Structure formats: C-alpha cells, structure tokens
Image 1: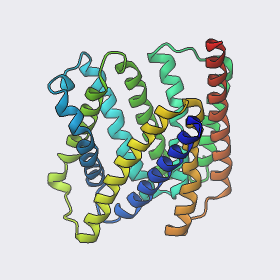
Image 2 (image 1 turned 135 degrees about the horizontal axis):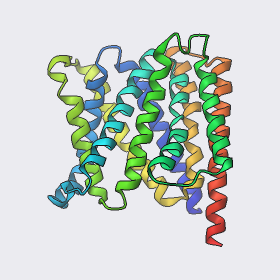
Image 3 (image 1 turned 30 degrees about the horizontal axis):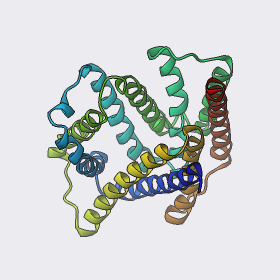
Image 4 (image 1 turned 45 degrees about the vertical axis):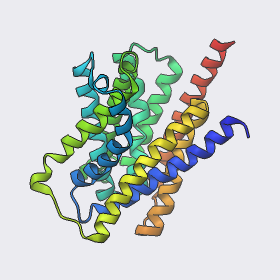
Length: 289
C-alpha cells in the first residue's frame, strides 16, 4: 500500500480519537472543572514524553528562547482550556467548526512574525474563512449576544500562536525540549489552581478522565505517525473529518443536530482552507520541479 494511503488511514484514526476525546470532555465537564480535565490529559502526555525527556536530560530543558516558549505555552494552554470550555456551552459540531479558524490565524501570524509571504489567493482564502466563521457565529442572532461563540475562536487564536511559535522554535530547539516544556508547564498551569478547584472523582469519573488522557495521547502519537508517513498536503484536509465525527457523536450522545448556519459556515471554512492547502501543494511541486 502506498505510504500516502497508509497515512490517510492513520490520519482518519487520529481525527476519530480526537473527536472522541472532545465528546468525552463534554460529558466530563458536567462534573469536573475545565482545568482538572486538562490536568489529567497533560499527565498522560507527560508520561508518553518522559522517556525522551529523561534520555536527553538536562539538554531537554535547555532553551535559547525562554520568552518564545512562554508565548507558545500560553497559546497552548488557552487552546486546551477553551477547547473543553467551548463544548460545555456550545453544540459539539459548532464548537469544532469554530476551532478551524486556527488555519486562518496561522496564515496571518506567519505573515507578521515569520515573514512568510501571503499572496492574493491566500488573502482571499483567509477572508472567506473568516466569513465562514461569522456565518457559524450568526452575528445578530445570538453569535455576539451570547459570547459563548467567541470561546472556540479565542482558542483557535491560542492554537495558532502555539503553532507559529513552534515553527520558529523548531529551527533551534530539539523535539525533546518542545515535548518537555509542553508536558511540564501546561500541566503546572492547569494543576496549581486545582488546590481550590479539585473535585475528587468517583470510580466512573476517574475512568472517564483517565480514558480521555490515554485517548488524547494516543491520538497525538497516531497523528504524528500519519504526518511522518504522508505528505502534509494529503494529510491536512483529513482533519476536517472531525466535523463528520462530531456531528455523529453529537447526535448519538447529546441529541444535537447542526443547524443550517453551522453547515453553511463549515462548508465555507473547509472550502477556503482546502483551497489554501491546494495552492501550497502546487507551489511546493513547482519548487521541486
């Protein structure tokens, strides 16, 4: 089987696992604070990264850019916490659709901080993508009156900040360093407030929180495997399968059906970001030629 085809299967599995984790978070947030859910998730991320961190210690904690790490970790923390918060107050499909604003925030931040060129086609795609976000938020019909719709958009900005920072950090920092700081410090940021917010889980709650941590960690590793095996232009669009998984899980677990605004906005967002990916793939192909 060609590697790109194998990578697509791995990417489909990764997106299914991520969608499952998000649905489980919507169940867990009824009884547990957002930070407690994020803390349990980071415990398992840390355990998965620990062998690499120990093997390369103390080099794994040395960095030339502490301020950029701080920016990246802040963005990651905002993305993780708002991701759980959003599904607590919004339908599953709506929350996930709005997080895809990350693609367009990354394009803008890459222009401002990395100096990456943003041509006319990408500018139009970014504009169309934000129009899609506005359609989902429905200004004047609850989108801006109910500020809950802004939560996943803020999370998308945080995720884009983290992604853009990693692009810069990866030029000078090892993978072990990136893993160590992500696992340790995001866990600490979520864990310290738990001295006041901790809710001791019962056995079923503990099973739910542990399962979320295990599945989230597995999803990350499976996603990395997909990216290593296949081309980014092939794997990238698979992420939008989260919308399909979210719609199925939202209906099966919570009786949610996406409304026409969410469906229309999702089509615009997926179409515009897919166009950006297609243009980038063509540009890379021309460079190789």
